[in-house]
Length: 383
Ligand SMILES: Nc1nc2c(ncn2[C@@H]2O[C@H](COP(=O)(O)OP(=O)(O)OP(=O)(O)O)[C@@H](O)[C@H]2O)c(=O)[nH]1
Ligand SMILES: [Mg+2]
Image (cartoon, rainbow, N blue to C red; front, top):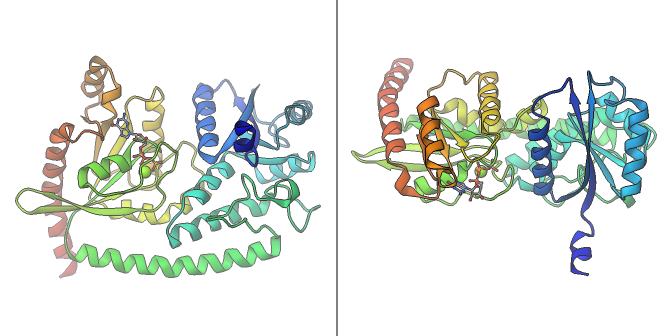
């Protein structure tokens, strides 16, 4: 009885992963998608893997395969089918027209998690805007009031239809366009406020350090332990959406501002990157980036590659950066040793302050070498 009642109201999903041209990261992507579903509160009934030399332009998979998938979904009692990789707007519309089931993709799933986790006013507006922008071209015509793309059975907002907070995502086309306009304007105003705040902070001339890394790497935990603050840390993907800043004091009255940022994930689409705007501004302002890696994750190399790619896409590739191998408590000492020997960086357990010594020293050295240059540059700029 208990199981049935906790599962009721929970979305039941069939995952469809399309492996293009024998891509080697299929297993890791599927594991990650399962993890995203768990975080979003979606029950995964089954995972179907399709191998294709290239994506079908119309349906992502072939027409015959699509029918098979939809029949399987009905038989298994799924109420949503989640596609990975993402569907183009045309594919999303074509598939939605072929079925009564709700059809979403990986990006919509991630946006749904963002919607559940956003807490600041700014973060909520950003997420709602990203959701609307993503959903709008994917809405199908035949259901003008409330598209099945986002509304669940009976019009209830399930996965893909949740707005930030408890609100349901509005997806009437005309209203969506108006709302997008309004949100964009409000966000502009808030960005202005943030600019002022950051400017005041810059005037104080404290160096800024931003913690970045793959989602769930332990960034918030590290920030907490470093500063004994209380950033939300949880075994969830994208637990942190809003930038949080704290002070960290070193000896000799040296002080830095240290900020936590939203986690990265591979294949982050432009729509999602925009939702990170506040976080990205923090990183652009930083004097030093601390890249935190979950060293105990078997997929860590791909996580590092994804973070490196995103950072250079954002024009942050040249910023001074320190690599931190986190969760060493979960690692075999020999393996931990090999990691730093090959790639450098610092081994820590964010749960254990006793492991922070060498990292703190490196931060202090980099910042106060770097910090002085920056101060000189700022002074020169001001005069
Ligand atoms: N064993 C172990 N667990 C850790 C360590 N650091 C963090 N964790 C756990 O890893 C999980 C994720 O930690 P967070 O600090 O929320 O990770 P994050 O990088 O901020 O994640 P997002 O904000 O979701 O991107 C939590 O369950 C932490 O308790 C560590 O050094 N060792
Ligand atoms: Mg976090």
